[in-house]
Length: 399
Image (tube, rainbow, N blue to C red; front, side, top):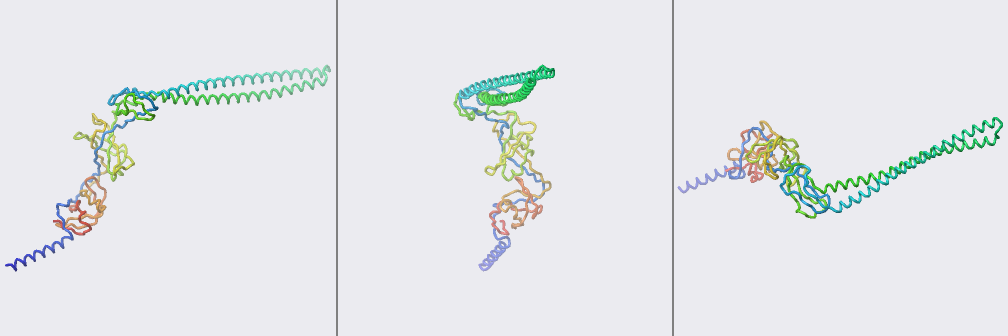
């Protein structure tokens, strides 16, 4: 009996060794792996993410100049477009405006004086031209009278020659008077233009200072609500310091963060569904995608299509789902770590109590499934999780 028992034990040991050798080079427990079946169906590529509500229009108002700020509202106040929110007392800016306005008045007076001088210069030149014209006519008449007298024998030749010289002199004077009139007009016009340009330049300086002084009163850019107030009452602030923000309650957007691998597939205008807890979904679309990757994620914004949920608040949490693509009747399997471990090039196909390594080719993937292009057939089962403990073994026994 002892010999028989020992023989049976040796036989069982041999059978176990042969089975282990034929079943795979390694053995793992089935509880340490996850197996999924390959099947056909509609592969929906979508992104589900938690987002927060942000105002599409929420500017922060800054100080145009340094000074003491008097607040007229508090955080949460509902304001109307153009309503005064705060005033900055800046004596330096107001004094500068007064100085520049005085300079403008002086330059305007100089420009007016230059215009008057130009008119006087033109009038003087015109008067000289008219006088030269009269002198030429008078000289012409004298010459004609002397010529008639000479023809009648009453006037000597020398008097005729003298009259001819006087006419020539009058003609030269007339020609110079005409040139002087043109030059005087041009010179007076240039001086007037320069004075006017200086006055216009100073007027632009004054206009800008007037704009800055008007901007000392911070006004609501639209109907909305006061958001965060950055300062306290009667606080002295520096130039460009933030004062407060205004939130547009009419238009909200949802900001989400998506993994970098899906960001390249996002495009502006893609449809989305936005839900708040268990409420009904609201249609929306992608309105912006950030070109920057931060910690493996990309920021994107969703905008409501027609209407938005009532009672939305800044930074409220919402759920968003974006449909990227739908593959009809695609061969797919549950997505798991095996895609990242082998780059989608290999999978362990379960055959009974063994898993055999087989080359495959994968396609697009969603959050829950991956498309199989080659290497697998519908109904086959593969190891989708836990294959990292297989190493490079071609066959694994699953207990």
